[in-house]
Length: 490
Image (cartoon, rainbow, N blue to C red):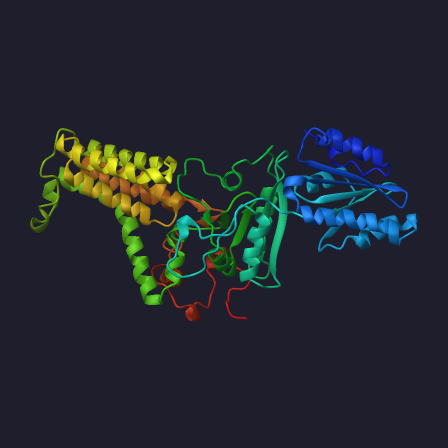
């Protein structure tokens, strides 16, 4: 850990001190990926430092070429600092006066140019991070619409957002987190729309983070920003689609980008934000509304279908005569509640196996699962056909849920409700649902009520939640983000 004095070490005018500092601080000559070149320009030594894997090689070569050409075209060594600055024909050149700033920039993929006799360094932005090209996110596919998505490159991600939002008030403020990792975190917002108190709160929280590194990038940042305690529900929304992030920026939300993560963090969010999907806005408003209702029905089934069916199976007297067919015809050798739990755990096994199974083997794994669970397990009496039917329907509802984090949280709640019904019957069902509602109502995401606009109720906002309103009729931004400019027209 560095002391405050070490962090504020000024750049020495003696270039030998710079070399010694770099050798001790970042392991120059030990780490193969740390690039170093020393040139003699107008009888004075000039040193360049960079990380080979994070810089554009062609630009580094161009900078070296420019430095060498100074000897042929200039003669005033006293003006070398000014000459070098003018000859660095690049879009971003920034002077720094402390070694800590220079080291941070070098390790972030920039070039540091030191000149003997000068107490500052010129930082040239030549970053060229390794990574994949933008492609459509697997979890947010649409039938029609753009096919680009965020990547692990934070510079590319902000550019994808800027391409869709060419507003002079769009701000991308870069911060660094992690004493060792120096992870880049970008706060993106529209200055005359976003709540300034929210922006300040996020900046203060991020700047106050004390940690050596954030290897899990966006998830680590979320855990520092959000106080969870025992809450299992997602308090932020993740998206890999630039169009989704831009849409939220226009509403007054703030977006957080973390380098090495392809997901953008949207804050603040509510429960209903996790039920939105880009596909609804790529269809006609009526079709989008239909898709939205189907999705709500699927999520409702994922939550309450299994405990409700178990309650009716345990107490058939609660059913009307024309629904008396509900319930297992053959209970089998295992209690129904245990069957539900085992089947749910089995589906989780399959989900995790699908993640870790190579693609060529996934079809074979599906066939094995179908034979073992769908046929043999029923024949031996481990599961009844009705249990497989309702557990599968509930699982489909979870897969329909746009937010993976929300679907996992709903699975936990479903398990809780099944256990309450098994232990206490109808009273357990009522108590379980009541506790669930009370739990959801008390959740806050950055001081934002999680169940808004249902609780507290807001009719206009609830209408936008239930129906896909045509864009020309969406004239106001959601009040829950407290935007500076509530009206969406210029």
